[in-house]
Image (tube, rainbow, N blue to C red; front, side, top):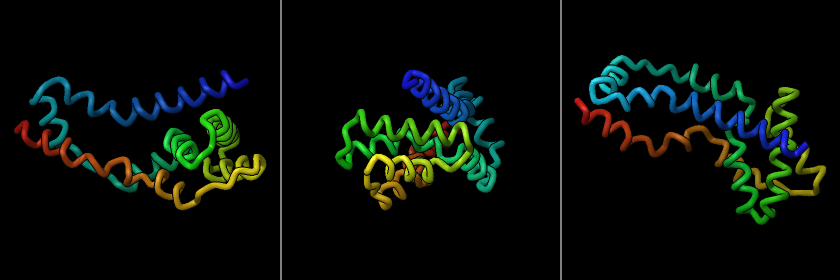
Length: 140
């Protein structure tokens, strides 16, 4: 069963990565393609947030796993906890943070809620994009 869980998480992460960088892949076609992409870009922040929320929080599984390990949990225990919660979210639709809390409580693991707040904050993933957009703007 653990192999199935690994496959599930890998598939979710691959889909998220593909969707997240798929559009940026067009930049690789050259300065002209990059310029057209950026000049015509319309950002709908509400839609972006809705897309993130549609995953139920599964986009944060890797960050949560690393946070659990940093907090002192063994990698194996952190992985098992994260996988079980992610699988329940995937199958039942409950938010990942809720399933994580439930599985942590059942395992006797105390979660660092402030740490989870930080790693599950979407803004954290775009905080360093300024230089990327600066390079794109320089293509003009």
